[in-house]
Amino acid sequence: MRTDGILDRLATLRAADAPTHGGRVLSYVYDPGLAELDELAAAAARAVQPVNGLDPTTFTSVAVMERELVAFARDMLRGTADGPDAVVGSVTSGGTESCLLAVKIARDAFREDHPGLRPRVVAPVSVHAAFRKAAQYLDVAITLVPVDPATGTPAADALLAELDGGDVALVVVSAPSYPHGVVDPVAEVAAAAAARGVPVHVDACVGGWVLPFWEGAGGEPVPAFDFSVPGVTSVSADVHKYGYAPKGTSVLLVRGRDRQRRQFFATTGWPGYPVVNPTTSGSRSAAPLAAAWAVSQALGVPGYTALTARCVRATRALHAAVDRIDGLRVVGHPTGPLVAVACDESVPPARQVDPHLWADAVRSLGWVLQPQPGLTQDDGTRLPHTTHLTVTPVTEAGLDGLVPALVAGADAVRGEARPDVSAVLGALAGAFARPAGAQAAGPSADAVWEALLAALGADGGTERRATGSVLPDRLAPLMAVMEVLPAPVAERALVEIVARVAEAPA
Ligand SMILES: *Cc1c(COP(=O)(O)O)cnc(C)c1O
Image 1 (cartoon, rainbow, N blue to C red):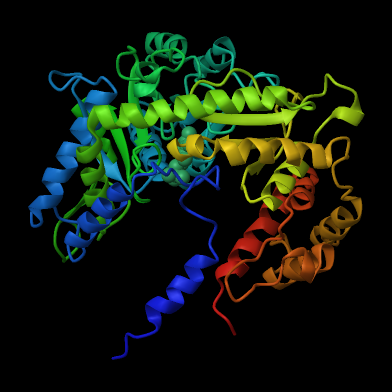
Image 2: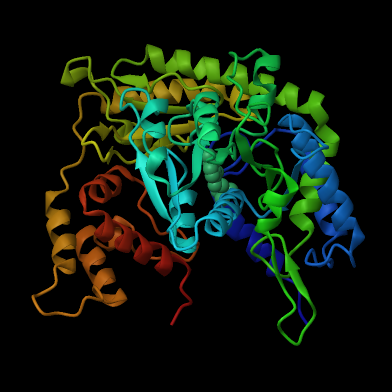
C-alpha cells in the first residue's frame, strides 16, 4: 500500500476551494476565528472515527454525547425537561434532515387522526427549500404564503387564513428566514394554530444557536421564537451553523415524548438485527456529533455570547455600510446576522446598482457573496433578486477589507443593467420544447447538456476543470437566465450542471 502523495494531492485540491476561514466567503461557512476550537473538533472527530453511531447501546459514548448536546440545545431554546410537555430531541446530520423529520412527525400524527386525508404543510414562501423537499419526499401538499415584497415578512393573518381547511398537518415559521433574515411572527401564528389544534414547527436552523445570545450580546431585541412560546411543537437548530461545529450536525427538538416517537423508524420484520433509527441513516459516523459536542462544551453560554457579540457588531457595520452605498438597500428589517441586499429603486436608474452584478464585482475583489434569484409569488407580487450575506464572528476583523470592496464593487457597476439573456433563453427553452406526440419524459441528460453548452458556451463555465470548478466566475448572467426560465426547465438545467460536476470521467 502506498500512502505518499495522496494527502499532497488533497492539499492541492483544497487550495482551489473557496476559503473556509477568514471571512472571505459570506455564506456556507461559519468561522469563529478560533484555531484551537478547530483543533479540538478535529481531535474529537478522530477519537470516534471507528465508532458506528447506528447503535448507542453498543457505543455508549454516542448516547452520552447526544444527551449532553440535546440538553444544551433544549436549555438554550427554553424547553422544559419534565412533565407531559418535556422537550426531547435528537441529533441529525443537518438542517435539511431536521426539517424532513419534523414534517414526518407531523404527517404521521395527522394520518393517525385523519385516515384518508392528504396532509398539508403551510409556510411563508421564504421558508427554507428543505420544506419543499420534505413535501416531495414525504408526499404531503405544501402551501406557500406570499411575504411582503418590501420586507420579506409574512403577514400572520395570511398564514392563518390557510389553516381552516381541515387538512393542515403543520405550520412552519422561521427564526430567521434564510433569504431575508426575518424572524417570522412566531407567537401570533403559534397562538392561533394551537387554538385550531395545528402543530407549529419553528425552523431555527440558522438562528437557533445565535438568536438566543443576540440581545445579551448587545443586539436588538429578538421576539420569542422558542419553546417559551405556547403552541410551538418542534424547533430545528443547526449546530454546524452558528454552533460553530464542523458540517454534519443539527438538533431537532420536539415538545412531548409521544409526538417525538413518530420520528423513529423501527422494524423487527426482517431476518437481521432489530432496526431502530431516529433519523434517516442507518450506519452513521459519530465524528460530527463528537466534534459538535466538544465545541459546545468548550464554548458554553459565555463562549457563544462572546462570538455573538462579534456578529452583532459586524452586522451593524454592514447595515451602515450598505445604507451608505447609493443604489443598494438592505431588504426590510432583519433580526440577527443575515442580510439581504436589493437594488434601491427609489433612486434614478443611473444610480441604481444591480445586486448580482455587484456580487460579481465584489467577488473579483476577493469576497464571495451569494446571489438569490427574484421570485413571483402566488399573488402575482414579485420578490426582487437580492444578494445574501451571512455575517460570522470573523466578519468583524475583516471589515477593513470587506467594506471598501462592497463600495468599490458598487461603484464599478452602478447604472449597469442586468445582462440581457434573451438569446440564451431561446436556446435553452427550445431544447425543452417537445414536439407534439413526443414522450412526456422530457429531454435526455445528453440533450440538456448539449443545450447548456450551446447556450452558455464552454467558456461560460460548463467545462469541468481538473480542480472540480465548473461555474463561470461571473454568476449574474446564469442567475438571470435561471430566473426567467420556467421553473421545470431551470431546475432540470441546474440538475444537469451539478450532476456533471461530480460525474466520473469516461
Ligand atoms: C441552512 C438552513 C436549513 C437547511 O440546513 P442544511 O444544514 O443546509 O441542510 C434549513 N432552514 C434554514 C432557515 C436554514 O438556514
